[in-house]
Image 1: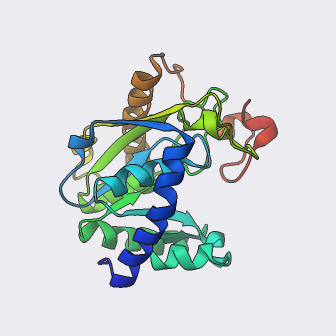
Image 2: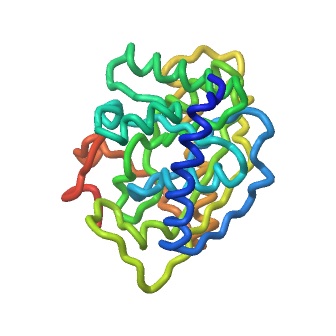
Length: 248
């Protein structure tokens, strides 16, 4: 899936709006950018606020890597927004098995052309009360193991102060700094040659989530919880908003 002229032009227009806005909302500090692969890769960040895609997309675009996200299928039906998503080759995600497989195939095409595909392994905003990464879904691990695509873990911290999880307005003062740390590609060699069954994918996903959590611990200068938050164990939904039970 090569970038078309229409896609490039739309990216330039969107970036002309988003980048100045992000610079106005918060300071930024990006570290580990030299670890981004020269070829295609899967970016796997943590997810703690609705503006996370803007934070990660801003960084990737500034490194001349066009960001492609797996986005909820319903967003493509929203006037104007849907047109922008289609023009910039974002990838709709459907909840059905067939739809999910199609989404992953489109994502693979992006990576095969040297692009960056952003997959949030958590699938939605973390339910962890203290915003640590929760139990992940297996889509990123499956794509990586099937195709040998590198998974680059990322963590960011600070944007949630500007726009807290499930918030309705921005908090501009005091001025905050959004820090983003890129890690080394996750070593999944231990899973090479193994059948891609539930046990393998779950274990590989845990390795990816461990890498993301370690980066976030570095940014926060804190120790993460000993056990990763599992929404199912707390009678929470896996997708969508979970305000009352999802945390503070």
